[in-house]
Length: 260
Picture 1 (cartoon, helix red, strand yellow):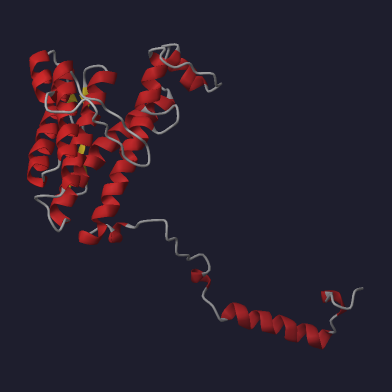
Picture 2 (cartoon, one colour):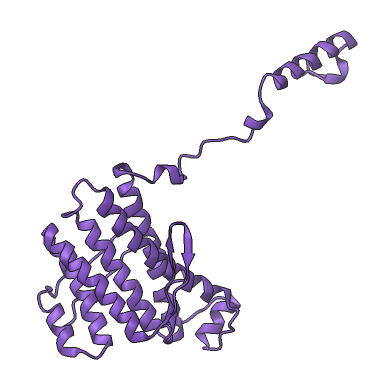
């Protein structure tokens, strides 16, 4: 046996007892309840989501949830799913749930489509909650452009629900920790809810003197009015928006162009 290697079998009885006793002392010196307790700096706990210090965390989290729902870079988002259903895209993979909606033969139990819908609902709720949170906790709540941005993204969530789903989409909410189920809304009602959010964004953008947020809200409102068949209203809403306007955010680029 190599001299630099210790073989437990070669330890004499007296030494073996001392060896085991030392191990026992080490184990008894710490609490077994603490063995699995670790600090993960990447997880934001609910206790950390309060007050002005959490404003940017809530804001970035809402952007991420909207990105996941809108265009997450996978086949399970609004852009890609609608593209597959309308033959704008072609699915070359083997996932049966994605093949179903590309062929427009979806089963009601399709797990992929369920996730796509839940992500959109989550984006709607989170952006609305973020707008309220920022208004309550921002150092400059009346002029913070992030409030307008959150209202606009919430508005786009309603627009996507109106455009991509049949009439009768429900919108639930949480109040006081209790889930309140919403009744089914018609397509027009969904678009009206979107317009309300865009109007809130426009009011906040005016106070914040933010052209970018004003233009984003105008593009969204124009799109909602266009879907309602109000062509004159859509043109008026989008008229002040430069044709070169592009809105992007991280982590996923979300590009909208003005309606002319």
